[in-house]
Image (cartoon, rainbow, N blue to C red):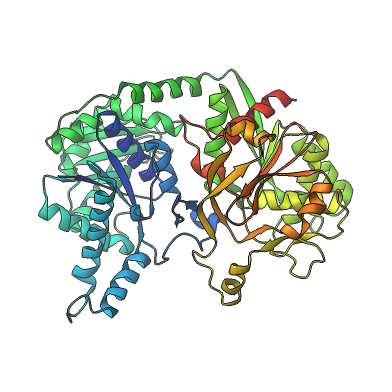
Length: 553
């Protein structure tokens, strides 16, 4: 029988359920088991594609083209395997499926009700994902916090599964223990209330992961054990750490993997010493880098008041880290708001130049990541022009690649006011334009899941930096966009010196651009960051960091 582990959160959001789920999965893999992970999000959206990254964080894209929560990215990075659409569900997706079945008379004329039909659909999807992946363990992360109305139906599905298969279902509560500064003592009462709230849904946690800014002490463990009806050894301390890839090792220091196996009456099948060694070696590299590499990210999805929301670009950040650690370097990321270089916002050209020199000249490399819309676009174009002329290594991802084409068209090919039609529909030189089949989607306001999504093939030019990075001609990468380089302008751009070094063979679409006589200037229509993993960094990021290392100011 497949074993199911539900991971739920208590006290507050953002305490690391996704990393906990991923880490436990990695531990079980190291003990010889096949593991997969599912994310359940309690929002009505059918998927994450239409949500603002500032509000919800990065939209991750799977190989089969699902726009989903960023935790799916964590699963892929920790488990080092692809996660597919079956492993992601939302309230909207579940309801949509139930309503479609009702319309198709699949309920034999019964009155279709929220309970049991919605929880039953959730259970059906969980078991389908288990069967598709042939998993020994299925990790199921339920989004939100215990006590919220939105996730009650998913907790009900978990309760029903436990009722039917009590020996095959476990519950792990990830909770938070605050240490109020004015009191100076760790408090367990919020966790006690979280457990009682979970009990009211008919669920008793088997293991409690105690998150806090400091390690859990024995008195607190005993208190949680007593008031939460749980063995003291099943209260696992999870203090704040600098790097998430330390979490599996920290959990194993508390023997978490073995405690899980004992609860489902299983023994370790075969210790995967290589996987354990990989994690330990990685942590050793992270903790003892030889020198720093300063990377600037020019974007717009991280400014919110006085705070920086790095979750908007989490896969880009992790890909930078993976590549830096490959080179045994410490990544230092600088957040650069593109609005500081935007002519429509800045008072003068001198102010723009001053800001560019101050922010970028000191950095070893610049990344312009993906995005949508007009905000800060002219500032990004100015930053791209600056790094091109200053010979600073540059990597443009999706929108970053498109704006590099716009900058080249304007300043090298002298196509004045060249632009992308996403921003300027009436531009005289639409060097970036929407692909024909997307025009009807825009016209009919059909925005959800209608972009070019998921993996597409790409053929590389053997004389390119990209080919040198990948070391092969045929690649496949993940996409999320509507607009493409307009083939009508390819000849003009190439005459100006731009190289089209990666082409989609199915549609003759440009996937990668490069320029000559530059240490590293590459733009990709796809999102290479989605396929980077800690022990297997993405080739383009490895090459980019290598160029940054050589360019070090």
